[in-house]
Amino acid sequence: AAKSTGKNVAVAFHPSMTVEAHRRARLETELRKAIDADALHLVYQPQFDCRTSQLIGAEALVRWTHPSDGEISPAEFIPVAEGSELIVALGQWVLRRACLDAARWNAEHDTAIHVSVNVSARQLRQAQFTEQVKAVLDESGLASPLLELELTESQLMANMAVGVEAMQQLRTAGVRLALDDFGTGYSSLSYLQSFPVNNLKIDRSFIRPLPQAGQPIVAAIISMARSFGIAVVAEGVEEPSQLAWLCDAGCDIVQGYLTGRPMPVAQFRELLGAEIC
Ligand code: C2E
Ligand code: MG
Ligand code: MG
Ligand code: MG
Image (tube, rainbow, N blue to C red; front, top):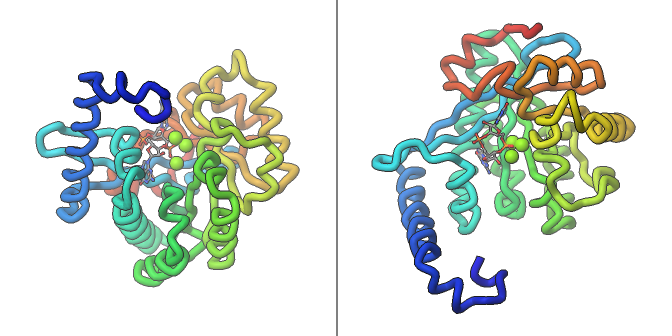
């Protein structure tokens, strides 16, 4: 932050910045230990098919219970991890845990419920990333189409060429891809053509005003995605009226507190076969 203000001296000596920088440094050290000590865990948020109301998948979301600070949000510690190579180890841990969990829930229930895993740009840029994904699929026994990797538009835009090549390799390996937080980046809608993604996740900020306001933009995103053959996932669906509007507007998949909060894997396994509506 100091660099971007153009007022380096004033900002660098602001006492609250020092506290903030100190906390980040401490979190980074402790996060490194947490990964080694297996102190992270995953929760799973269900995704439902709008047309059939069937449970079709879950997004894996990482949680960190800090020994003294308690539960720390990934919104805080993921950016810390992304500031260093730590995100690579963290991301690898998440990927492996999620594939092992999904392979187990599908074997237990004879289902084909996918798992979606968030991937950071720094992971995607690693030359070995596709090989690591294949190795985790082999180890877990999870079928490749049951793994979906979520990438954000803003992270992909930072290095288009590397991103698109890595994405193509992953698609060749049979893995599915989703564009996360769609609409919050700065890219033109036409960039959607260059990303080989299966799904587009409309950011929660576009869902919140529905159905009273914001319908034209969501309708436009759905229709544009359709024309590219990309399925649409609505994130952050909290109200029955939003669910009804989205299903009616041709949205394919919904995810949000209304249909299911992120939950421990044991609880998610009990859901298999559940329905909405
Ligand atoms: P995201 O990938 O967009 O995940 C969706 C976030 O929205 C999750 O927050 C989820 O709990 C929250 N959410 C879902 N439904 C609702 C709803 O109806 N209302 C509201 N208000 N919120 C809802 P969470 O778990 O705190 O994760 C925040 C972000 O942290 C994620 O956003 C993702 O960018 C990042 N993240 C989480 N786990 C990982 C991970 O394993 N790797 C990476 N690289 N990033 C992760
Ligand atoms: Mg996500
Ligand atoms: Mg998202
Ligand atoms: Mg997000």
